Image 1 (cartoon, rainbow, N blue to C red):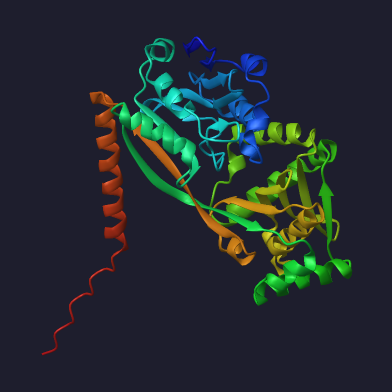
Image 2 (image 1 turned 30 degrees about the vertical axis):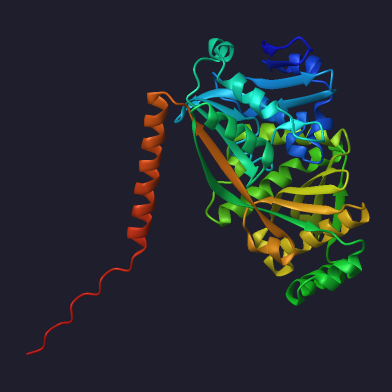
Length: 387
């Protein structure tokens, strides 16, 4: 579906199935850079497993052959609490981070403006229906490309709001393990030295599994350890949703075929007691998910698996380690710095969209009031009188 074109050959198209994407989108992954969550393998796996009935793929692709420039906005149209909404592929419970427009490196182009015009065009409306909202979830605060898209929608009369979701934690790795130890705080250095001692004594062993045949043979244990840890914390765990397991298994199989991920396994007494799943691209390694056995807490399996994983990343000349979304305290202990992840919502200028926006704002206000009221200490009972 071609939305716009000009005499110079620049076009904006909406790609509606993955066969069309593979045929017409060119080298998608070249635009994704080092963010594995923007790669086609990740987003196609997400679509195959996580989409709801009625969702419609709507990937906006721009190309300008004269300037040899192109761009992609990977999204889809869905129905939900916001009405008919354009959302980014990979959003939701999968928690894809650092999402943005995919563009060739260089100066910003007019792609954000063209993408906004596409979303509000009569051609898009005829194909997908009138949009009530655009939701951009999982972008960094101040991310420029989606900021330009939001600004263009504002110019068209839409109302935009932005809310903080969580922190995303990233650390610059040194060149050697010894440099890493030297820069760690004393408490974390003790954990690292404990990992080294237990490894030297043969009490634990770290396995690096990079081929899908081996990862697949360990997959059930990985799921079990992840769920066991979450259930101890009183949480359902990602794998309680069978769609999530289908998604992640498919994505890992695709990435493993390109030697772009690994499963780290901490063994003790012949049993896996900790695992973490790492995606790798060039100088960037990202820790997506982990699991550990809470019954072996005397080993500190979480700290051990993290140290061995970081040591392995340094050996592979990784420059940046990304712990991704979540404000767990251990991330700062390894020297990571917090970046703010946000969700932006843009509401269309027609009445029903504005009513939904007002209702959502009222609901958030009531929820905040209730939480504040419930957190207040109860009034002390009056003192008993004594005659």
